[in-house]
Image (cartoon, rainbow, N blue to C red; front, side, top):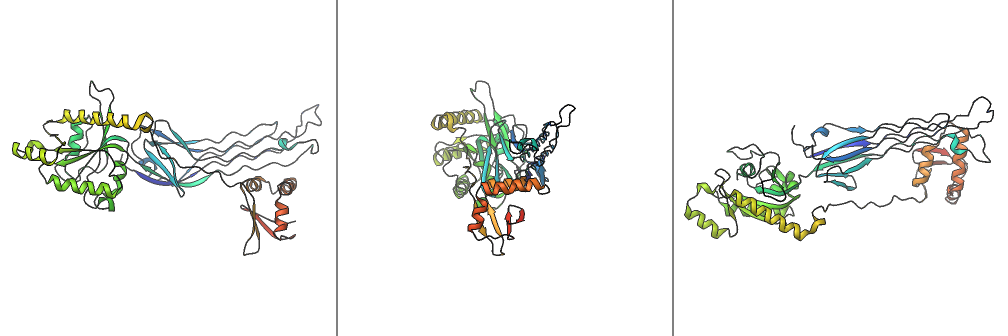
Length: 414
């Protein structure tokens, strides 16, 4: 399975079922009255975070994902069956966007987000019975489900991110630190996708996750090389390990990496410098590096020298960060601020001459109206009068015969 960290597709909630027009016809009940049941609600499209998935590849070629439609109501006050929900598993660390911005950050096992809600089922004629309307012969139609295009972006969740130039030995270091087995080669850009390894040695009070981020080069934040595509994964790491090849101009490499992190807005991330491949150096060069990189750890992923000390250093820094951040900060996530949809009423005259009425509630009523039923249309007209729409249209200059549009519904004003 290939690594895919960004996909886009359309999600569509199921349409609600229509209500039913029915009258009780049981024996010995000549005046049984209306008993049409309501339609079932449409199913929803739900995203669920799971640790069992590490890529968005299952959705790479999906264009539209639809939930099930609600069943229609029937006689004897029977409600239609609810539409089938569609649950889409996504990797931990998946961000959900639409055209308005961030919708959700799914970073915990089992966390869910409803990407497209199903439409509400319409009421049957039994719901409209009243002392003054004993035998209503109309029903409501079900509402369409929500529809929108979403973009999923995966940002690998890790405690430590290994950042370095190509061929700095990050994959070998991940192998030495954990039981992970990423591809290792003696050529640049061996690693093309982020790899994760869990450090879970005996005696460690809490295991932690290390991520091998594909090699960065100068200009990566502007799209060069593997580009800023993988810098997004660096952003989710709590601690960055700057891995340098000790035998290949480590001073210059460090400046390049720090410049790219600054350009990507990640310069405030806690960092730890690691000098790798020291097994190739003599004692004189090692002494020079200790002076040039005070506090840096010298390790050799090949021979295992310094690997245990590096594990302990990671553990201590992460424990220190945990204390600084506090128990709650470890799970801090970005949330979109949801604002209530506008629920008022607006009447405007379009340049083409028709009058347009907008407002969530009145648009819902128009969509639910059964325009093939005379009683249903009369009920809609009464709703317009009761909610002040007729008066608002008259104030706007509407006259009998003028065209009025509410949502996708068109009719003549009376």
